[in-house]
Structure formats: C-alpha cells, structure tokens
Image (cartoon, rainbow, N blue to C red):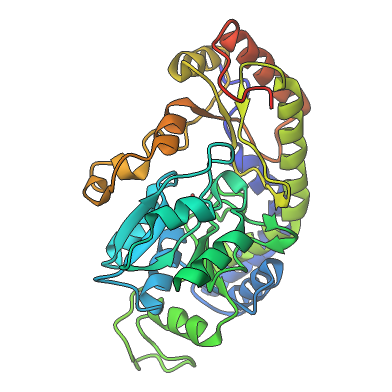
Length: 379
Ligand SMILES: *Cc1c(COP(=O)(O)O)cnc(C)c1O
C-alpha cells in the first residue's frame, strides 16, 4: 500500500520557505560564512523575543541545550534531578551525562504530563533541580511546578523541545524556569535543515556561562584563543539560523494549522473508543504530536499502515524501564507504564489537509471498531 497520509512532511515546509531564503542561503554559503555571524545573532534575538526572555543562546541540538544548562548551573555528581519518565530519552541522558542522578516521576493520567504532586513524590533530600517536559506540545502547569519547586528549593529547567510557541496561561513555554531548552531537530515544530537547538533565559550570568561552555570555554568577546573553562563545541550554524529565522516568521500560522487539524481529530473521534490526551484549560497546546490512546495498539497501528496511514509511538518504553536507565528507577510508575502500552501518534503537520484527517479518522474508527472502550474515552 502506498502512503496516503505520511506521519509528517518536512519537505513541504522547506519548499514553502525556500523562495524567501534561497538568496541569503547561497549568499552565506558562497561567501564562506558558516559559523556565527549576524545571521545567528539575528535568529537568537528573534527567538528570545518569541519566547519572552531576555536572551537566547544557539547551540548544537536540544540534548546539548539541557546538558549545557545543567553544567552551567553546577548540577552534577551528588545531585538529583526530577524529571517525568514519560519523555524522550534525551532529557534523562543530559542528566546522566552531567554526572547527576535522574529521579523519575510519574505523570497525570489525563494530560500525561508532570504535575506538582507527581514531582513532589519523586523529590529526595538529594534533589537540586526539576525538568518539567512540555510533552507532545502541551505545556506543564508551570505556575504549580514553579511554586512547588520554590517550596522545595529546586531550580526549574524547562525541556521545551516539543513546545515551540506553547503557552501556559498566556506565557510562553521556556520563560518560566531559570532556563528553557529547545531542540530544532528537523521534525520538531520549528526545525532546522539538520541538528540545532537553543537555551532561552533572562539570567545574564547564566547566559554568558552557557555561551562560553558551548564555545570551548571562550569568554565573551572575540578572543579566539582565550579559554576560561573546559567547554565543548556546540554551536548554532549560520545556514541553520537563516532557515530557522524564516520558519519562525511562519511559525504562528503553521501552529494555528496544527491546532485546527487537532480540533478536527478531536471532533471526528469524540464518542468513540479512542481516548484523547486531555488539555488543561490554561494551556495552549501546539500539537507537536497528536497522541491518542487505544487498546490493542499494535493491531490498530498495523491496520492503519495497511491503509496507508503512517503513525508513531512516543514513546514505547518509559525512561525508567530503558536498559541504560533502569538502574536509576525508584519503583513502578503505573501511569507512565499503562500509557506507554496505549499511546499512538497520528499524522500531524502544518500541511496536513482536512481530507487527510478525515481519512485517518475513518480508518482508525474502523480499526478500533468493536474495541474495548478505554476508561475516560469520549471525554
Ligand atoms: C527532541 C527532544 C530532545 C532532544 O533534542 P535533540 O535536538 O534531538 O538533541 C529533548 N527532549 C525532548 C522532549 C525531545 O523531544
């Protein structure tokens, strides 16, 4: 069966922006400007402004954004960092690579996100930081998390890799914690033509430290062979900044289209055995992923594939059960474990058409047919 509805369509976004960036792109390429320069600084300013923070620091990818932030905050050996187990491995990887201990928390059964309660249950005297993850594009209750973190004396670092343009009560994801970490991996809502990432913050000292760590420990300014710290090489490229700048100009329009397709999915699937991930009232969910829950997920997914509908699972194994992370598991996390068996990510991207969504829903409803109604379905 040919693909009728792909899971995503990155080429469509590239084709849309290319007429606007082609000249700048070849200009920088043929002039030999590849790392740093005015294009990077311009994108950093635009990104900080979009996120409502004072600064943005372009880095190599989202994993490095998290790792560099932890390092810059001096979080390492002996420190615990609370994070939800329902996330991409990179969140935990950054904690382990910083030398700290990941402390896995469970999530809310409706939103599948970290809550102040599930966070508190994972905190120990060793805990120094918490990383709420705005998973699938829906922001965590950042007012609740920040209050709970403050009461427990914890630093808040947001993993906003899936949440470009998401807002909690009108305020952008990434602007609540001491820092917000973004990925511009091609498949993310705002994606580069390769790997890229950024940290946003309004703390100037933290920004300077991250910028220096990401650039071989060089101090601010342009002294090429001065090094104050042992850093690494994790920078945002010039060509990526040109592409990201143009995509950012379209991001609100593209996000509105994602939200419209998500509303259509919700309408067409309501009252069926397909259970929706709930959206909290003050959240602006930007639908990086359109995640639903079904019983007999493998059978349903195979049926959709037969009908030409590509789907995904984000993620099939909660982090605390992944082989390299199991040694950090504190105990069972029943909500994460149950959800991992049921979640299914449906096609979602700005160029998805209403007719394609109808086709996906018809096929999905037929596949779940007489299926068991999951607790909370049709809500
Ligand atoms: C993609 C992602 C990351 C890592 O970003 P990369 O740019 O791929 O390194 C971190 N956390 C979450 C939740 C992600 O989805």
